[in-house]
Length: 324
Ligand code: UT7
Picture 1 (cartoon, protein in one colour):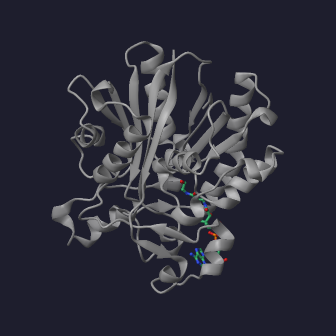
Picture 2 (picture 1 turned 180 degrees about the horizontal axis):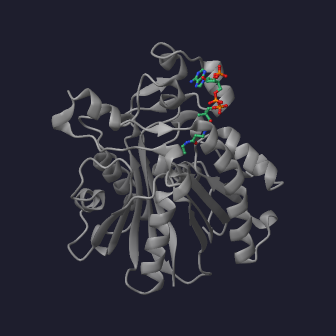
């Protein structure tokens, strides 16, 4: 048995921040951001209401409704996030509450930075393949705006908030093929030292330690080198040609990274859908949210062959091949 996706859902905060809005708070321009990243705007949460758990819960409710299943048939929830609201309980537990899943549902979180949703998806697949679960929710949710230094033009232009969720159901089918890789020796080019603490918001030094630190060029080079390689490797492992793939659904970080990947794979860019123009980089939420949009607009259709790949802090990167 493998886990087939039978439902998708996502959530984006109402508040939209455009590149022009950012150019009023840091020294940047719509032209620079569009040219270097492809991003035009991003959604930023109202932190009092749209917490990571809240957005995860709404995305999951939408995915469960899309799947048309009863919540008490869900026996596993795996949530990926780098920006949980609390150390514990987990986001998965808050999703359990939001969808009304029963106590016989196992809940836990994974943190593998931006590639976290694929890590959560593969974890849920293992539970389904081994017969330990039949229906699983796989969530990615982030409030990156909480961890961005809004005076640093090198990072604040890139990120946005949001959540996405897929419902998996045990079905007959070819196994999902996947590869996960990590390189801790390159880890210091993208890191965040501390988690936000509500009672230390006046402590300037501490607040600085909660900001993302990123060597953008190094991360860019890493991504355009490793993402095409890991995609080629996962296709070889699956014994599938890149021409047979309907969609390459990549982490939505930067249009230039996606374009470079398509070029290196000698594939038409039209097979690489993008949502980052309107969302920015939403880390672990980017892939399930994009799949939800593609399902709703009719691009994602049952039976299509999908490659998904992501990269981020750690450094970590992963890729999976599966039939939708
Ligand atoms: O999920 C993974 C998360 N991380 C990523 O995906 C990041 C990957 N890296 C990138 O996307 C790109 O490296 C960036 C978009 C972050 C930066 O683009 P770049 O083409 O690598 O620019 P750069 O850092 O080499 O900077 C070029 C110039 C610099 O000025 P000088 O030194 O040439 O005078 C920067 O100071 O652009 C300047 N710059 C900006 N200018 C206007 C940097 N950020 C901005 C900005 N607006 N927002």
